[in-house]
Image (cartoon, rainbow, N blue to C red):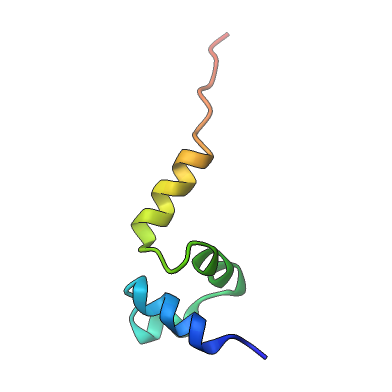
Length: 59
């Protein structure tokens, strides 16, 4: 059984409108739930800090 209560709470905390809520993929749900319902901008900033872009070296 899916944890609907937690999923709805996370979606509301992230400010998702209903149409976006129902379009989320499983992968997107997992990211949202791991972030504890953090706003999407915060999730993005956390991911950018954890996985910074690599600088290309010039030859």
